[in-house]
Length: 180
Image (cartoon, rainbow, N blue to C red; front, top):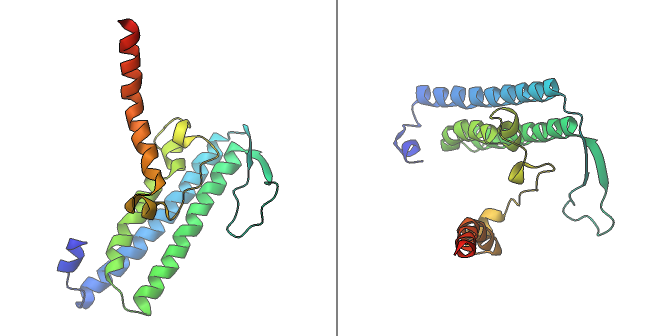
């Protein structure tokens, strides 16, 4: 963001380059996401996957809906959901820029979607070859959009990372005491 403050956003040439960069990056991200879908379909993992559908906000308590699908279809749905959120972001940033004349988000939003795609759980599995274990095991845990706020204000989610970070040390100490 410090770089964005040094840019002369009043210069029409700079503004046009920022617009081209932003919309070009968005087209690249959507194209890469469809490429990821093609890669997933090419692998054609038809392993059966059964899970309970995540509850939607405001949904009444009741028996959770059980979904049975294949790993391939689940992965494709996850990438399509990413594309949907990317398109929503494009619309929001476009309104902010064209209607309200905000220009600085163009720079940041040219970089973040590419990073988000390359670090998406599906990309980690299918592009980078990570094993679908642990945090990458399907079905993926729904991330809390307000989880970052809880971390900022010392929420309960601080305890879990500390416990997992200390776990290897505790195992090493236990193994050392058994050897003695």
